[in-house]
Image (cartoon, rainbow, N blue to C red; front, side, top):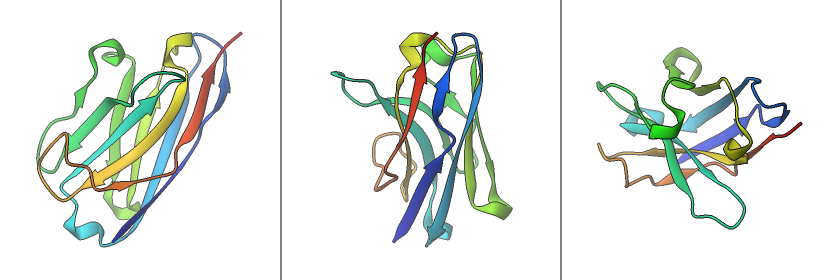
Length: 119
């Protein structure tokens, strides 16, 4: 089992920045894919950024150039640096992890952290 806990959400003005963190615990050594997803009110959950073990990060088109996914393996922590935030980035952001090398087979999920972009 793997436990994931997100933090770093909050209220930010358009154009501002936030950094989300996701601390993992448990059987972290079995994880080969980790990513950030988001769900806006009334919308389906969507992939924002993902990184596979040994691979390069991949991003949703609308966040490319603004968001950066990274990890600190020593701290078992996944990050999402979000710059130039827009109101349409408002959502609950979830950290997810999986044992397979797949974008769509995440087995473990955090409870989410709310990001609100508003003036």
